Length: 161
Image (cartoon, rainbow, N blue to C red; front, side, top):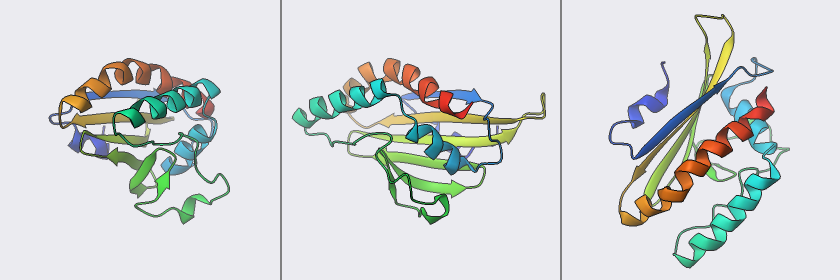
């Protein structure tokens, strides 16, 4: 509801969303992402390492790791276009941040959106992913990624509870 990522949904090849009530609802959306990414489980980093090795043989780029960013950099020092782990910062608002990656095979957008739940009156943090594929390689890439993505996101979000 009210998320900026909704405008990226038309024609998406893959999309999903996960929600959690964050332990610190006062943190901005970007701060929430940084907190979660910094606490990336080791098994996720091992999968990213495997992914990077495999896709290098296919001519795709090595994205690094979800927690591959300067943990000492202050949230307010991030600028649009900065790399934060595997993503580029596309949009940054206090209640929503859009990060992503774009290449000739697919475009990925990730939203971390804070909103007040009308049912509970508490802050809910929703992490949404939207992927648009551009060719066969993009669609083939998503075959193993989509099911694993559904394991990774909730595992990473546990750090926010």
